[in-house]
Length: 87
Image 1: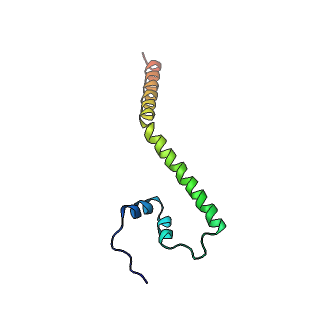
Image 2: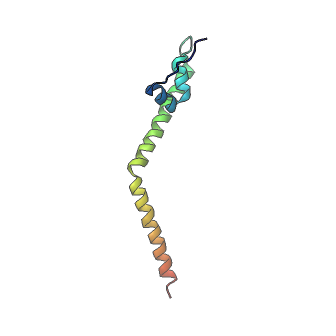
Image 3: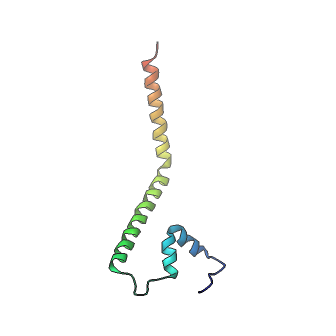
């Protein structure tokens, strides 16, 4: 059995962070190549990761807008309560 390398490159770490199973398969490919079902699942996994990353980017881009909307909403609720309970 081969002894694992003592060092991990930045690419290895990034691949493992992206998907530990993908990292393992990188060094241990199936003998007969990927099956049709495995290929479909891999495509579904790529679509899933792309969707998740797009959502993260969107949330990062509009973070200020979300906080601004939250502050405005809280101020509107407090203003409505002050108006209702004003003597």
